[in-house]
Figure 1: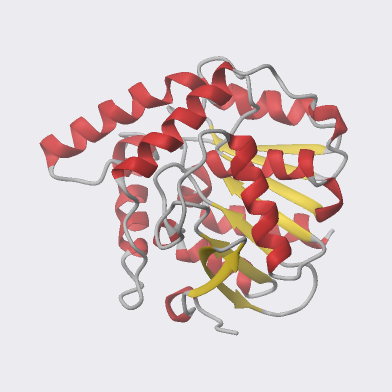
Figure 2 (figure 1 turned 90 degrees about the horizontal axis):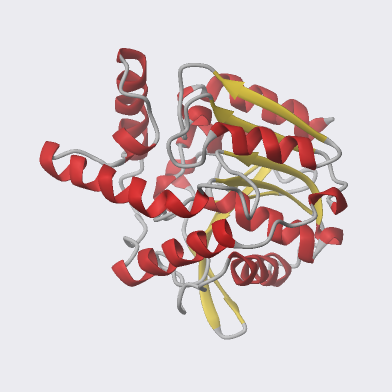
Amino acid sequence: MATKWTDAPTRTIYVDGVPFAYRELGVDTGVPVVFLHHLMAVLDDWDPRVIDGLAAHRRVITFDNRGVGASGGSVPFTVEEMGRDAIAFIRALGLEEVDLLGFSLGGGVAQMVALQAPDLVRRMILAGTGPRGGGGIDEITKVAVKAYIKAAFTLSDAKNFLFFPRTPEGKRAAKDYLARLKERTRDRDKHISLRARRAQLKAIRAAGLAREDDLSVITQPVFVANGDHDLMVDSSHSADLARRIPNASLTIYPGSGHGGVFQHHEDFVKKALAFLAA
């Protein structure tokens, strides 16, 4: 397998007749780590420092879920369905046990995987996310729209406003992160469609308004991380998530927002590897 994110080829596997685009890299030892990405993201939106940091010690698998990027089909309108698609993809690869790293929307999907197929999950890392039914999560659409308007007026990427605080430190972190996303120059993924974006926003709003899940049944070890000023998923939701999962630990990064694990990628990778190796 490839050892660097910039060199990992994009592959395709058919799941119930639907093509799923994915990449894998790293050391083929131990339980693979499957990444579940965020709202409006495709494969190229993963931070290479996080991917390469984990891949130095583990087999890492990233993929576009149904209807996203180069994957076929249509984006489901619920996180439960997204979870079922993720389970089907993992099993199509012939994997019987995985670790999950879910960021933002991907953290919600990871929870669905653990609830629907607990035998498939060994450990989970949930970053920049919260529980289904958390208050305010249904407001993400408004936050995203405001950020995209600001981005349009400033001719910049909306992630500047969604992921990082508008402090000198946050602006530097945003600049560095966005530069890292451009390091891969060949075999880039397809952009996410407007239709897919709308479906994801609908799924997130439905999750925010849904009845809370009984997270006490998730008995796997879970590492929860976030920044201390998350505009998209209030940091208190991450703390609530860690309280409700019996075997969970929590790290809140100071002076950072939704993309706290990218702003503090060195510490996050170190903690993530220690957690996965425990």
